[in-house]
Amino acid sequence: MPPYDGVLFDLFSGLLDSQPAYDQVAGNAELGGRWRREHSRLTYLAGAYRPFDDVVADAAGPDRAAALVAGLGELEPWPEAPAVLARLRGTVKLGVVTNCSEELGRRAAAKVCVPFDVIATAEAAGAYKPRPEPYLLALEMLGLEAARTLFVAGSPDDIAGAARVGLPVYWHNRRGLELDGRTRPLVEHDSLAPLIGEIDDVLPLG
Image 1 (cartoon, rainbow, N blue to C red):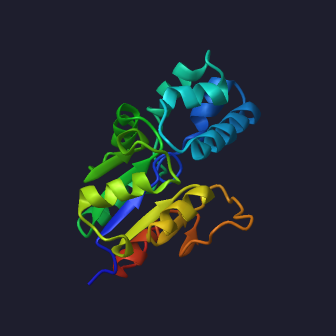
Image 2 (spheres, rainbow, N blue to C red):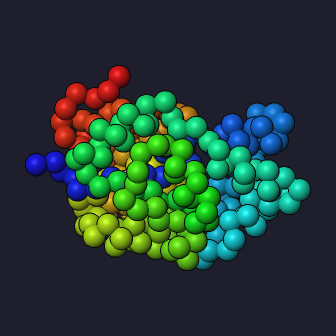
């Protein structure tokens, strides 16, 4: 029997490559990287939900916010993501826990081209990760226990939030980030492919 009944994913780093949206609107990778880091910092500090577009405007400026939000809804998934999720879908329930609005969360999740059982947004939960509300909302909607639900984090700051509600964490560290003393995950990989082995012990893709 698989050790997990469900897998929850961070959306904008865990499943989708969000950096190109920042770079394109900013006009160069250096400024795009600064915008992304500031956006992430502000989101994780926000706590109670306030409009996602306002947080984006604080990070990138009000004149660029609309274009950046639009770009975030058109992101491409990591290359292996659709195949990995299609394999997992026959074994466990799948969900997304994301720090954005309802409209953007559903639009961006659809780019993976694999249906999710739940998309839990910060807007629906009334709070931004790493507060517990978004993770708990997803678990409640799926009817699953935290200990039997794997969370796939894309950001190191997501690891502690998920762990605090009892979710074991797989860190998809695609960009080779450092933990710098933050909570350690259960496992760390630079790809989604090893998820297959974590779930049902079949050979990983790739």
